[in-house]
Length: 196
Image (cartoon, rainbow, N blue to C red; front, top):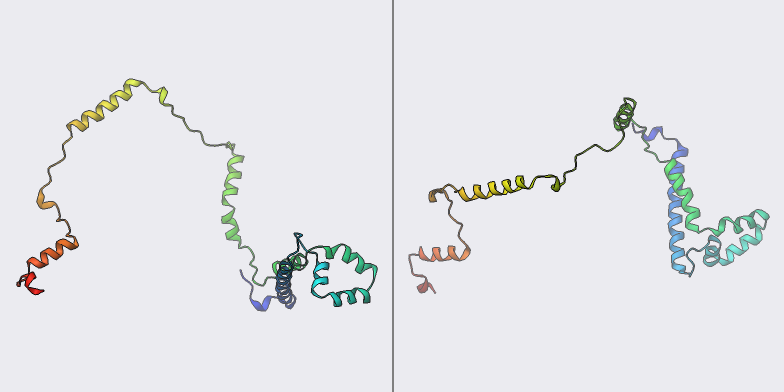
């Protein structure tokens, strides 16, 4: 049961668009980190800001110098920038997606049919194991029976004669390109060698 766009709140629409904005920022930060090509596996967000905008980042840290900023730089900004932007992006896009559908009760009932039947069978005392099957071993059979089977097949093939097929029932074999060319030359009223 999809919801119409009029039923979606403004906060959900804004959160969804903000999530895509964070996703684009995460993509750009990952691209910037890849172009730096440092020898470490990940580049922290602090190092990335120092590389991309060193003057503005140092001025910002000097202007807003506080214990909270130092704590954030020492902990949170040591993570990669694409991760810092990608986590809220995924959260916002998933929670604020506009066309979420509630589960149809009939669909849910049909999807859980197997589980319900298995539970009912277990309550009735059915065993939860593989179906039993009989394994066959060729050593269990009598050799005389196998020899009789082979002898019967040989005698059958010895006495078997296919029915004679009337030649009129056999369709003519299709002609190849060379045979068609030869038959066309034979049907000419003027001899072929005098045409050239």
